[in-house]
Image 1: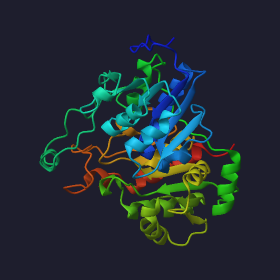
Image 2: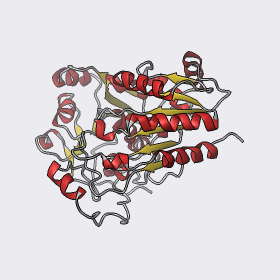
Image 3: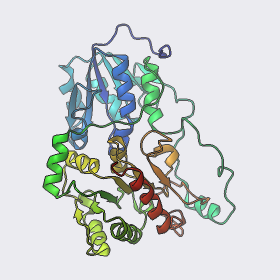
Length: 380
């Protein structure tokens, strides 16, 4: 049974609008909350308001009836006016920004729910206090990083992680306030067999061999990127030992990095497919679904792969796997690697010292971890 709602609505809403988040990985982490919202309001029409760049993520998703997108530069007033005619009765604001709350206020949605944050509480009818167990991703200063780097590891090492620290609980807490179940679900995305077959044909992903996905980029900054030379070393070793194909992933901004990686891997007996900057979001999903394992940094595609059921080996440096790891926390299908250094996680875009959090993850460790997962997922 769900807990009693902390927000009492005057009527059961028939039309619900969810203001979605703005980044790919965060969007995947909202899916458990969307599924719980669907479970709570089974007969309601649930629409998602999302940036256009993420609209392709949502077709086939069981939590949603409609996807409404907006483009860069489209003002809040225009978005709100566009939504007024839809007569939504309940609005759920997942981002913490004033702008996202303003859009639903301008849409004249009578019940508006979101977290209490400065400059926007008056735009909400129900401002939800911070949840118990919330962990903020505070950036450390350069002085803090340098101080920690020169000292002993802090007491956090060996301590049990906060069981509700993961960011997916941040979104679940809002739906729980509306009476939905609090128990977490694994993030979930959907791609059809037809889409997978079309992506395989388009990009030459032969289904007669196994494929290892490689995702060496990260939009946030270089502090989240394991060195590309190490990705190449892992790829060479595994291609030669396991005779697996290599699929290189990335966005348009990763094209140069992907070419450098492909060149460093060199010619192998097994095929290499460079997909960086060449896929739509749906094609990216289908191609990730075709891989036996994805080796990646902490990125949006990491979350997408896990939500599609593809096992992930993820390397963390400046960020925290306890907060933004792939899938449901503790899922044994995934392996999360990080060096035990005192200054991580710092949440900085660039390392101000010697990049020890990433350099401390050895090629041999990654090779063995990927081999283990590839072996575990081998066809019977």
